[in-house]
Image (cartoon, rainbow, N blue to C red; front, side, top):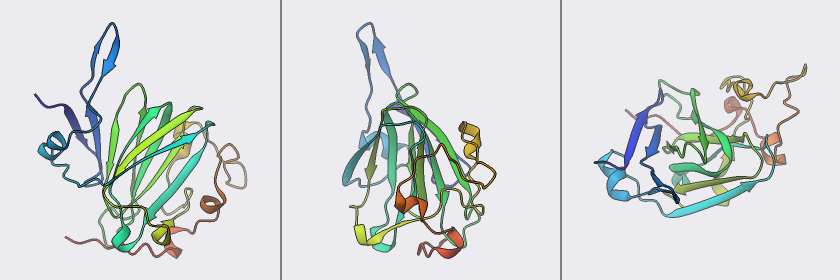
Length: 199
């Protein structure tokens, strides 16, 4: 019997993964990643780097991030502590789903994972305090290839209001905590991601 359940989304290759949880009176256990099970489910990546981040406050938003060119990354992400809404955006020009997005709530309770292929931007917004966010990447981080687009880009249209974050009259989300880099990120129409869709 497989150790994971894979759910397809509206974006090809972007997948929700539900690991099988084993629990008893002591607590619980699950395999966060087993290559053979993921490959059997069609998720075949050579992950080379594991990352963890900590966000102290609810409303911390990181993204929409990507890496350009040969440094592009596919990511398998999950929330080790707390809760986030995680977003994938298709940044491949020429794609039938260009600038479309998919979101899923990841938490330490549902233990879901989100598989985001290369060519997609990635963002997450913390829904609780004290969030530990984890992910595996199939390429090493390269500072020179680092890129991003605005989290509130109207051409993408991520509806952050679904999770209780409402813009003011000027359109800015006062409750959202952003880095200077993310606050000044370009809109997709002005950003050269370098991603192209190939049939």
